[in-house]
Each structure stands twice: as C-alpha cells, then as structure tokens.
Image 1 (cartoon, rainbow, N blue to C red):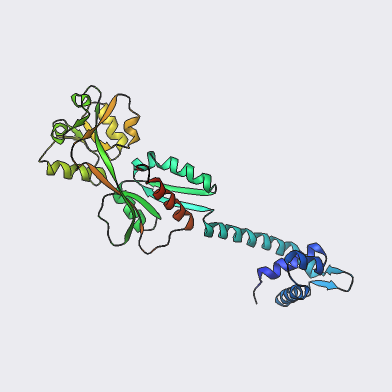
Image 2: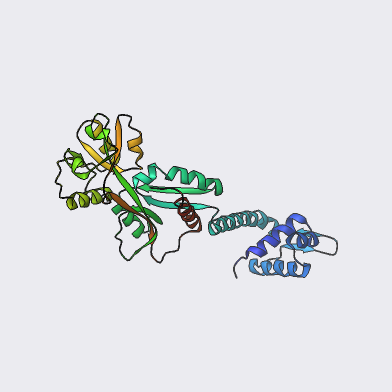
Length: 300
C-alpha cells in the first residue's frame, strides 16, 4: 500500500494540534473519518503512530521519528500540487516561441510586457530565426508556437493567424529615391541591391516580385540578418528591401524607407502550431493576447 497525501496531511495535522478534535476541525473532517485515515497510515507504515486516551494524544517513538520526514514530504507534495495547478490554469509556465527577427525586435517586447502584467510568473523562451527554421522548430516541438513568414505549410502545421507585412526599400537620405514618397520596382532595380539570403521569407517575396516585373538587378550582398543588410546600405553598397516594421531601419538616422508600388511587395505572415498538439494553458493565453493585439495594429 502506498503513502497517501491525505493520510500524511492528517498525521501531521494531528501531531501539530495534539488533538484529534482540533485536527478534524482544521481538515474539515469528522473525527471518525480522521481516525480512519490515521489507521490506514499506521497500517501502511506497520506501526502505531499515536498513543491516545480520553484525555490526550501523544506521538509514539515511531511517530516522533516519522514526523519530520513526513512533514518534509507533505511540504514537497503540496508545493508540487501548487505548481501543477499553476501550470494547469495558465498562471505559471513557459511560452516557447520561435519567431521572425522583425517580430522579436518590434512588437514582441511590448506583448511580453503586457502579458506579464496579467501573468507575472510567465517565462518566455524565444528563438528569433528565419522562417524556415521557425517552421522546423514548431514541427519538431522545440517551440510550441511560431510567428513565421510565407503561406505554404505542410500538413503537420496548423495556422492560428494569417496576416501580411508590407515591404519597403531602404536607401540613404542622399539617394535620388529618398526624394519620392513611393517608388516603382523598376526604379529600385536600377541600383545594386543588398538582399537577405535565399531561404529567408523576405527574399522569397522580393525574388518573386522582381521576376514578375521582369527585373534582373545587380545583387551586391546577401546577408542573413536585416541588421547586416542595413549596415551594408549605410556603407554605400546598395539599397535593401525590408519589412516596414523592421526596427533596424528606424534606428538609422541617415537612412529612409520608401513604399514600393504594387501588391507584390507584401510578405505573408502566420502564427502556427503543430497540428494535433494541445498548447500549454499559458501559451494558449498568450496566443489569445496576440490575436487580440492584431485587431488594432500590425504586429510583425
């Protein structure tokens, strides 16, 4: 027979109270029910734990030796139960998120801050990576949710939200395009381009748009990260095309962003999870906040 949490709690309460009557009241039990629990524990242990008569209750030697051990066990089990309940009701736990770097550097910090006001014990494990890696991490269950780019997903992934991110051309303030509010794809393609590496979600959109327009630009550099692309533009190596929400652009006082005419320069974005997998309650709560935030603003 295994030790039972209720029986251990009953034993510790009687030992501390020194009275079956007071212990029964504290545990909201009848005295006969409490007596049954103590008797079952004694049967499990194989020894009497209390000497009792009509006037007093006292621990036996075995009971005195077991009390600190069972008290520690009770404390540990109750802490585990509290932690388990917190995980179950979404008031504690870790949100494991893989996301595009633009989202990680733009809307994500504010979303986390707002979420932690509601759930102070929330922890976050963030993987800011390119779209293909986001999909792989979610597929392999190394992340529970992913904010990714593109609109083609295999059957193992479920889309929770679909949106779009407008792309812009980034150039020095001294460039001729900086004097315009909106530029054409042909105007952009006349200058050397610093494009994010093949396989990134932004590059896929740009390549498709250039091909549809019949443009074959000079590719000056192909960095993986947007910060590097911006640095290359600052260094005079060419222009780049990035999401309008990229904070790397906003941080550069000598660069400007201009809209590109046409519907092609839009990057699809999606919030995904692995199909058939139940999200942890805390992650589901974060997803709900994410979806709420999209009703009034662009988040990626």
